[in-house]
Image (tube, rainbow, N blue to C red; front, side):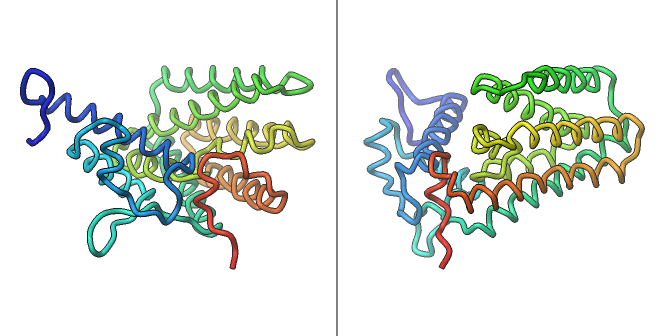
Length: 254
């Protein structure tokens, strides 16, 4: 290994930790527009900016390419990927397919009571948020946290490391996560109605899993993802994406 730290050779554990931190920082730079779409990544510039050696940077670049945020260039190196609206729609559709499969597996395999209880508590928390007549930013933030936790619990219920890993790759793409469009619609008149519909679907999915109805759980979860596709279309039409992380990576229509 060619990476050194003060006092001697860097341990594999330290190198791995540094690569993860570098990966997170580079992702922030990409989604924040600091590294613009289509731009080639200059390794030396990243070394100077982040103050780390080339080893963790190269590891981070490889991982970001695996995530789909970077593309490998034919003559070596990486460039920041850009996405069409169709790319984003397909990523959402893929998320729904994978989450549907996880929900079906959870129903068919059975779920331990502790996970079902945690999911129920999570949905109870969302119900409390939705009881408010008007949702402020704090309420939306709480909804996002609970919503993301519920989706994570569905993944844990299935007990499939392989599918969970693929889902993690998909949701790391811009706008593909389960809560990507919640904040976008936070100040629209239909915002609360949208969340109420989503919460109803949450309840139905959990009910199907508890009753071991695999096909129903899968269909409901895939339908749940279609809300995000509809929200994408509305947000694009209303030009409401300008403040969202990663928006600069979406190519304008020809």
